[in-house]
Length: 344
Image (cartoon, rainbow, N blue to C red; front, side, top):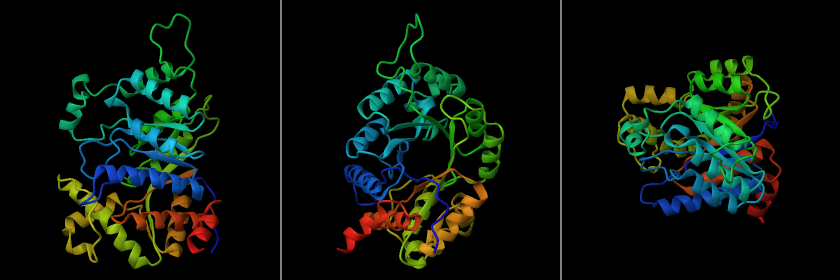
């Protein structure tokens, strides 16, 4: 079996809380996973901002990024993403400027324009009082704070100014793709939960890209759920926890990560199966051979410059194992050493 097309491989994590577990356990596992991903040779480790969801512990994203960066040495750490409308641009500049000062050359700032929450929670975040914000305007304000201070500038981000943080726009539609292209920024598409506009978004991003100081050429990242196990049946069973979690979301009753089930069709209705089938349509689940073929097909369709993988599992050991098998399949530098350590 040949190695998949060699583009950078990264991790997207939401510090998933499992049923019967605690947020503290989820956060500790995320820190362990980040160190493991670094040892395996993954390029970056991103954390996502979500609120008021019982199964996600990464709500204080900048705080968790600092903890993960402190527990690692080389891997890039960042947000996938910070939901900018929830925050004052100055606060984001100061937080990520502080992270960059503490961990120079390792911090990424990925930004989204959704609230990462329901509308009632968005109101509690003070987003609604501001009318939802003007994302392009807030983005330009943030970039201004991160640039070197201009003569006479009255409001400055300290730390933050002149930090030259790489900024990526995240999205599941064409809007952020076009804005990232216009500004010459990196772009990541959330194909792991909303793949419908994926190909159009990447086409618009590449065709409209304008070189910038940050990027001379477009950098398109595709996000995907990937679960690798020793057999297809085992991988599908592990992935049933993610399928349950997304089903509970569309039922309006979000839950923590549930134990896997042998037959997911006994859990959901035919209508739910169809809806989740669309949401998770780009998931790649199976044994190494199945995943190899699936990832190659995803890269062939998208032409992505990087893949960022999300893997949730009720059993943390299964989660670690999936990332290990994927690293080995990808031919990452640390995968062979990790496998040797396991078998020794």
